[in-house]
Length: 216
Image (tube, rainbow, N blue to C red; front, side):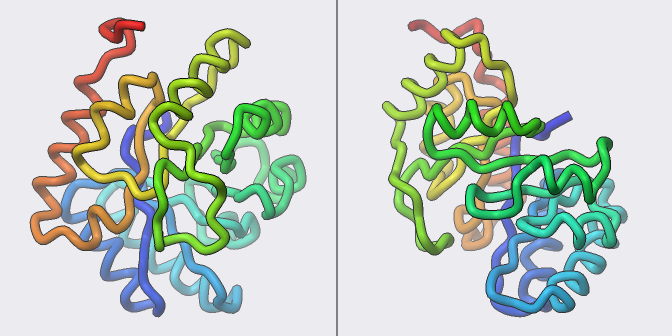
């Protein structure tokens, strides 16, 4: 089952990454994506193993960004692949059929591509500009989400879609009304002084917005 709240880790060093992950777990997050860029694989693997221990302690699920081999070796629940990362079919050969694989998308055409590749869920974004990610794809915005989700409905494409990219608490009700499955956050949680409350608020918002209550 794909959680409705994904936390994307932040930090430039292993210790700071693990600190942000532990804080998110303490706050109640049940789905953690370890995202480390521009580091050797041995460094990422070390962080993945330690993050896996933390997630196991909290009964949370760990997703590894970009690296199927590391996801497999660290015993992670899944791997998330960007559009310029390894193809999902090739990643599946490494991870096996049981591991969850998520794929990034920026357009409806990307979603078709990801579904054909066999993704288990889609990370669709960015919602707005964010400094968290380098080489940012074109911003989608609320109207873009409405259009893409409607295109999915019209094409009978059913796959969990997670909105991502610069999302803050006030955005979530509107985003959920586009019929996405859930949201991913990073800085909005990492930089918040009361992380437990914001996680509680987000879970309430993503669970209380029901698709059958949405008016077209």
